Length: 110
Image 1 (tube, rainbow, N blue to C red):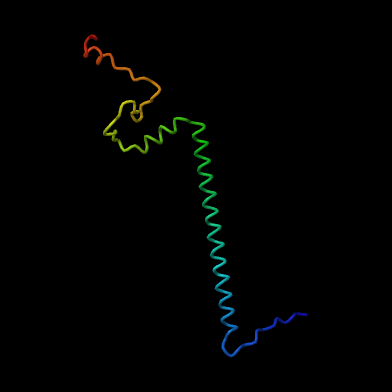
Image 2: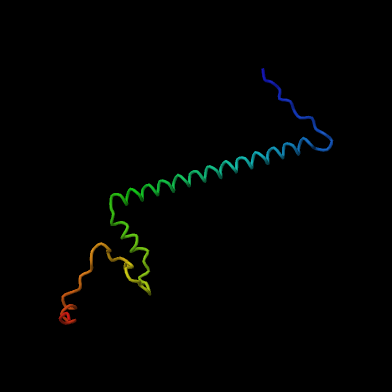
């Protein structure tokens, strides 16, 4: 009814036991490598999902970029601004208008 499993014949130098131990160690390394590969794949999928969510948020709300810039800004303006260089957080497409009080204080144009 039940088939007998053959038992390894013991050798005088214990080679059978060492073979089994080596096989067990190899199986453990294989399982460890498979677990690490699965963890890397899951981490990659999670990062891809986060990137997709950020892209969708940017598509639906363009001012989110300005919010991100403001969150990362340390409050310091550049120490040197060159001619034509944009000033941070000031829109480059709209010309800045001087306040009326500043124009009146400067006097008439010469």
